[in-house]
Image (cartoon, rainbow, N blue to C red; front, side):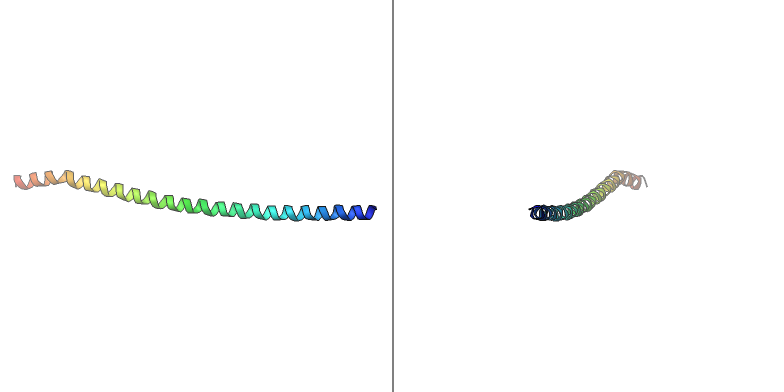
Length: 79
């Protein structure tokens, strides 16, 4: 009958609507997870960058000290 056909179509439509809603929630969860991963990666990269900067500055300071040592010795010898 027509009513039975309409009932079946209504049931199918309801299943599709629930499936679409579930997929939308899954997409939102996936986007949130990706954002958390990207934020974590960014934090790790900033830590590594800061570490590299500190090591570079320390190396530059050591070279400056090493380069000035002979000048200091020479000035001491000249009196």
